[in-house]
Image (cartoon, rainbow, N blue to C red):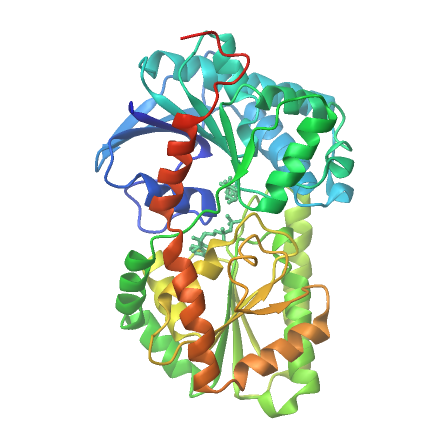
Length: 452
Ligand code: ADP
Ligand code: G6P
């Protein structure tokens, strides 16, 4: 097989310790490690002039990172408005939050065409191109329009709702037609594959979607967790708890993660089970994400208010029920916090996969593991069904699950964790990428592809 070329809007900064949070960059970075490949995408910087940007290159550990700048108006129409103000809510089943505009759709198409034009001269004839996520639905077709005949695969990291919802997007069938340019489309779960194939079917298109659940590198994460648990930061956290149990939440500050519902669930725990007052601390790490998109600002205000209200109502002069941090935390320290946490509380209303759930399992001490409380609506839930599963909309159910987790005996914790750990080791980031790329190699070429 030829060189692997990954294309995604967000590209990790290979030289920085604190990375922007997000499953795509983390999962793929684990997957490409060790091979020779190129990763093309947005630099995160603003372009100065109006002409096509020149890519910048940086090669680290055999991976060449090629990134382009976008102008302010491209960034606004393509990334903020169309990708994150229209596609993101729609694909997370939140049609009511979608702010549709034809102009943003136009910018989205233009930026996809720009990605194709600037990538084209970097491609070699036997490259395998792997495009990622909703920012780049039309990229495959844009590359085909420029004459690219090499294999092109696509992976969607977010959920896919049924056609009855997708069709709320005016012109949704055009996006589906563009997707036909890919030789294979991977999604996270069987439910997502069924929904996408149904959308193809009812529009008279070829069914190209298959489920490839993404994983992590559990060995590496365990090692990070062991080191992180011995770090100065972990020591400080441990000392500050003064024996209280630690419930941990880690998410981007995103409305798909069910954070207000989670805070209310925790509030219900301390309201209905007073024996936990002063004996448990909930630490939520939620770095600000997409802070220029209105819905995200609304959520932030809501969480500031909720935290203040709950802490005001229940805190003692020597106990704070919720600790809430909106800054990112370095990955190795975070891994140590996972290992220390008695309970991980992960309650998305919808999520493509949720790597945090898998990371928490990998980080646990095999002698005395913690308990994972997980939403039914995380993409990871079908695989991680030995977690304590909850409906995230029901605060009382979250409270009961937390009580169950905080009082669970060692035998049950071990029995559940061993099964979960086996599952997390079964499909890793590496095996996910290998399985997808092998299936891409074997896939029937897309109908639009001219014969090689
Ligand atoms: P999403 O892709 O929607 O953000 P995932 O749970 O799949 O959700 O992936 C999130 C990734 O970002 C995980 O690898 C997680 O460790 C990382 N992450 C989340 N929150 C933080 C944080 N506060 N600091 C650093 N990394 C974080
Ligand atoms: C999710 C999406 C990714 C995105 C990440 C972080 O994981 O599937 O495509 O990169 O969130 O979001 P951001 O907008 O910061 O790239």
